Image 1 (tube, helix red, strand yellow):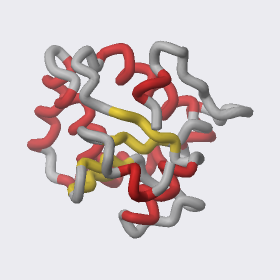
Image 2 (tube, one colour):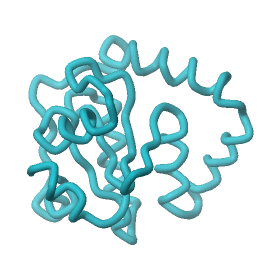
Image 3 (cartoon, rainbow, N blue to C red):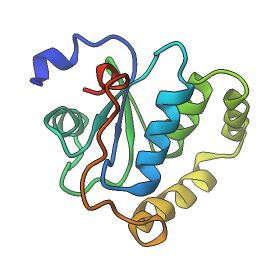
Image 4 (cartoon, one colour):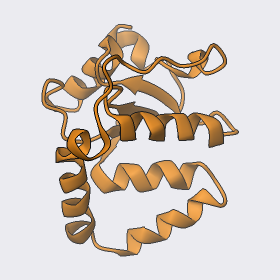
Length: 139
């Protein structure tokens, strides 16, 4: 997918690490619970994810955060995680109450988990592949 076609997709795009067990589980959770089909997903290991990381001024070879790209708006770190759950509707939206916790307290926890995600949760040998039903939501 080229940079010009990225903007053709409507709605937020979650860029996640498809090699990370936790990140992949979260992506699958989003696909199961996003009944309105609001989110699209892109692996940070594929062409689309790499292009989105670069467009946001981030190094795709050293990803330190999942991101959500919605047009010109970019969310990262704990803000991105909370926005995902808020976007899933009830009951998952209730998790967004954690926004009352200041970023300076939330983000260090997020960064610690992000840095240690492979050690704590494991790393996949191959990238996760969606089911045929999910494939239309993966960029």
